[in-house]
Image 1 (cartoon, helix red, strand yellow):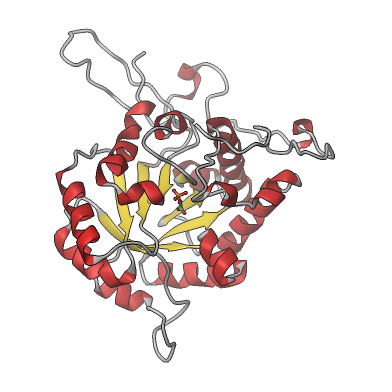
Image 2 (cartoon, rainbow, N blue to C red; image 1 turned 45 degrees about the vertical axis):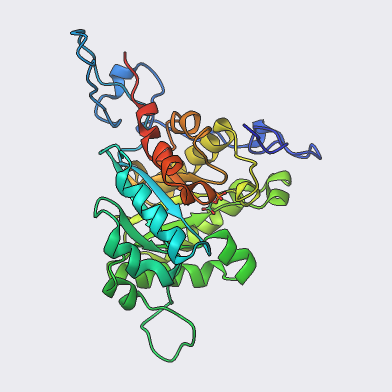
Length: 319
Ligand code: PGA
């Protein structure tokens, strides 16, 4: 697996001004396993798995600090043609997708209607963006009302390409999230640091600032999935190591616990995005604070996307 050539420690930086010891250790009590598994029964999502007919009893085992259902989204970005979309939909329709995963795809606007009409209802549809308020005289924009009308259940907001290529800021993204939620469109809220921010030891500063902008705007976290997507990992083939991703996910869950509530921290799915593929998903999925994935390039291939969806099985460990 190609990993970015920086330390696995969040705060470790090339100029040595910070070390991992300067990163405040979060208090995870109540949210993740810190002692014996039996001491936190009920706090962790439990999976009961079958013993494939061997007759041995198995007990449920865990690799989740949160209690939300595994979630995998496919962000198709600005890719595809009518023909390639048809092919991808037919691959997804014939793929086996584990039942205990929420699966969502985000086609380009132009193809949403086509996908909605041909893709199995097992997979929900997201848009890749939405307008900040009610529709009207906003040339080139698509409103939340229109997205709902066409069958979207979700919208991706705060994606790094919209932040850093299009120039959307925290406040604007927060307003979009609030409006989408007010109209019952669920939100995949993306955050993540750039490489220079990571190298300057600012990963959590940036991610927490972006989280705060969402927290300041959204009335409730019930319909929000947080996607941690380090910018340096998106579309680069440089996936975060499982340890790098886990470290930030744990910090984000801890942030939710301290700044929203323990209940929201436990229930909110925190998914990872950035060069996830069929080969690296399983190791990432084993991390206890990784509740799923937001997938770009690899979501354009149906069989590979299905492998990523089915990496939920990596969380199920025979005791
Ligand atoms: P990638 O994109 O999987 O191609 O890196 C992820 C994303 O942008 O959501």
